[in-house]
Length: 490
Image 1 (tube, rainbow, N blue to C red):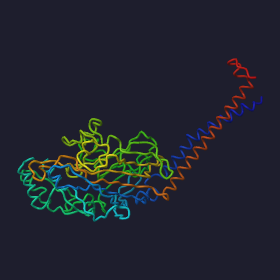
Image 2 (image 1 turned 90 degrees about the vertical axis):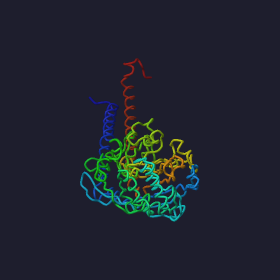
Image 3 (image 1 turned 180 degrees about the vertical axis):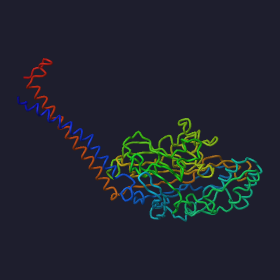
Image 4 (image 1 turned 90 degrees about the horizontal axis):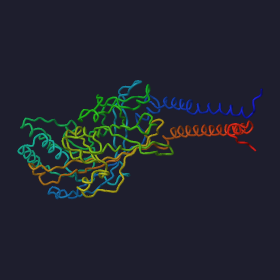
């Protein structure tokens, strides 16, 4: 017996719908994963490898200094009055010196060279800036933590003062950043005063040459050794840290949670990030920890849809709101009770250096109230835009501020009258954006996948429409509804 045409249409459309759904959720996904997996891995010679090993993306570091305009008054107990100077802009050239590579890992030394860009800067590298004397404050704090003996502390202070050291000093921008300035006055005194009390301290390696600058050991050097996953055997390991300087975890903090780096990346490449509930961990050696990034919403850059991430609230939260931060605490640091900052002491020889958002944004109000000259209304958020299918960071804008804790030490004449506060030194912004030219292959891949997905969805809608029309016609002809529900067609 010949089947009615409407029933035939229903069967054909249903079969087509099943096939298209299979194509949409089976074959298409398989093809996407296969194509993406074949490209997004750290294999010598492929596009990702070439970009990753010597980044062609323009990267800029912008430095803003908090110039102290009333240093003499601060030494007498007055509130510091600060004036922000900058930006002083440097372009970065990043490359990775490959030491070893196989299907599982790649071992390398990162090398960054900074080049001053006067046309983008507001000021010269030779501008003089007055800041807190960081080596002096650090030595005083370390000595105080080791031994609170009044005689030792006063002797240390007298010896440094006799050599011409004071609480504040003025240097050029280039000296504060990459060139460094002499700290020979501190070299002998770093350990001798405390040795008299049976305590031995070591001079940090980075100042053994007798100079100090915030980044004087970073420009053009390649000393760190990273080992990360290639994603060849398992795409979920792409870019994930296996070890840093031969260690699978840090050892400076008080708990394995704070020392953990194994699920982190360097922030330039990630495994695919389709799951927006996932927290991303970015390890930054200068921050002495992994920084958690949380999804904040969809984004777009150069017409490429992205997942946008920013610092998770837990990074800067107090213990009351995030008890897990306890392992970053040392003794009774006030930051543990107040949100907005975290310490770097394991990476800076015990010096009281802290990180915050610029201008203490979203920090405890006490930090901003202790100084004058900060912008209370600025937005200094950090963001990373990631293309979710391949996990590539196509835009990043990271902002962090460096501070040092200033304390009054009664046994040291230099510090006896100073206010107790968190003293801002400078903040920096690091930006990186994929160029239009480099974005073309990624843009076409994204657009192609979107078009293919849209076409399949339209076909699915068409098949559903055919089925519904055919069902309606068949129902009318066979009077299904009349038999079932007493409904009659006209």
